[in-house]
Image (cartoon, rainbow, N blue to C red):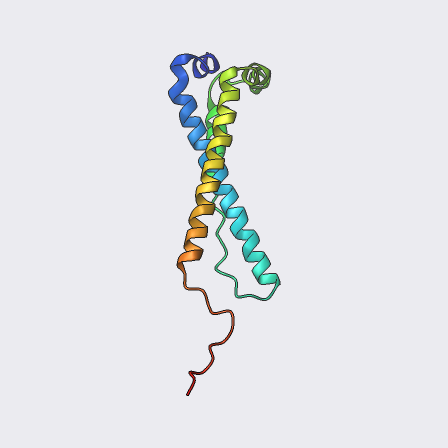
Length: 136
């Protein structure tokens, strides 16, 4: 019943919330992974690395909480969930959610790249060659 509701016209709000949560989670994981990679590379080449990013386990904590709730729910059967997967994957709304997630992640990536580019161009750039003394 829950799956049918989520993929019904009345479940649009829930689908939008799921998309927002998925996008935020993937985006956060991606940013932390990139920051950790940059930290490791800077450390490997001997540059002063910025403070490493502490991994956030907020997303993992949410997933674990949901799993605990499901396990504690009377009558919950994991085999039923597995049987529902083909049904969920065949829903047009599910495919639309996938496109929405990809689109929003792309928008965030582009916005972040533009923002970083603008931040780089706003910073004063060091001269390419040393300044010569003034002529006498």
